[in-house]
Length: 350
View 1 (cartoon, rainbow, N blue to C red):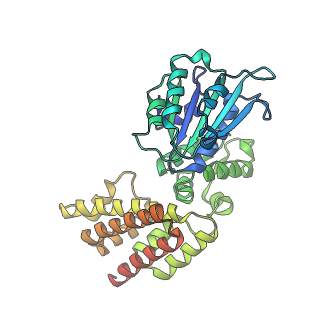
View 2 (view 1 turned 180 degrees about the vertical axis):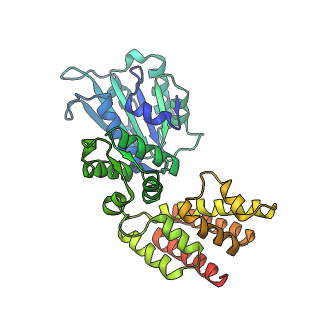
View 3 (view 1 turned 45 degrees about the vertical axis):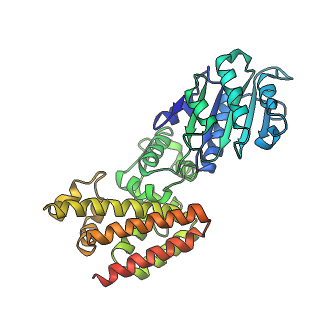
């Protein structure tokens, strides 16, 4: 079965009893690893880590793919359940693995163990992915960089589970600092919960001051601040903020993704203005709405950036993303050059 959207969180917290295995795939290998760790505990909370868990790689199956079937049907030496973790680095044994998955799905009683498969990015044509998505007793879950909506849900839910609230302004400020990283968000939520006393104080709520004191990157520069500086032509402030952010371990790719979203929102508003709407009317129709404290700067950028230049900037962002993903070029250098180019253009339009 294919598990997407908000269903993923519920499934991972409470995997159905009749599920034999889960495929965790996608470009975010760190997220896949984190989910595999948490899922293994939920599958077998009492598992003996020496004898109850078998870790395999695809190279282990090169000479004998049937090893996976043998491990899935083997009884525990000490009784109780077992877990098999398969780290899939390639799909050269894809046909053999797919055949085993389909056989177990059709005959679930053969499975004496639970299975977790960790893989990288898989196309929809992948035989293993298709088999898990079509199965009744296997699930496929994509692991992609976190978007803003997912992070907002993760933060509010994670804090609420610990009886802690959060001010809307603080949430708006915190989300960009965590952009693209579920694992970072988990750690930051736990750190914030500890700081707030795990909700032992009735009505505990995270505020802007808490974010500035505790959150990673909150003390230096938020992603939003860097982007707003770049698009408003504040070149020196943008460069200094970017350097502080990188030093504070903010991923440059997260800044690039944030920049892409901001440019698309500017482009959308710009198109509305070309259709006769005022700047105020155009930004009020955006969803999610522009953060109140940024409305003035946003309108200033709309007046500074022609629609053609915005579309060209979106294309440059997409090219930067392609370079990082396909060539392995250093993300820090690519994003820094892009921010400098955009801020220099905006500065000249002042």
